[in-house]
Image 1 (cartoon, rainbow, N blue to C red):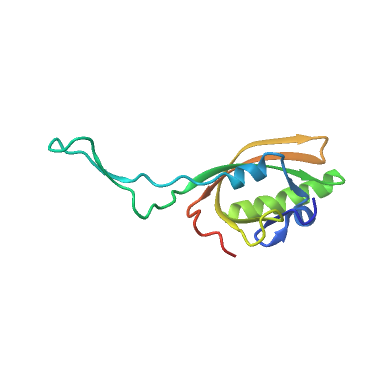
Image 2: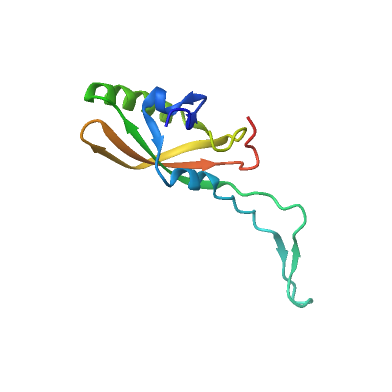
Length: 138
């Protein structure tokens, strides 16, 4: 888990005890959609005219599931509070060891679910937005 996930340049596991859920990587790697092509329908022509040249990527929303672990309750709340400060700043740059040189530049929107188990393990479901999926270079 160490060295697997980086958030804003910090190793998420070392800093906050955060690791990715088994679906997080696939959510990050899901290809973004193209923006809708320019179309024009005229009653003077059959069908419609579609300009498909130079397609552009659309922004995308992500649902990222992560886990926060700690050795005891005190460490859990320290890590939780520290991570909440990062979320409150709004900007999350996410990198993984699986895609060297790729950084997902996202905006934190909300945490739709938070579950705490045994006072040392918490599961978060983060809602993020990637405004420009074409800008992933470090």
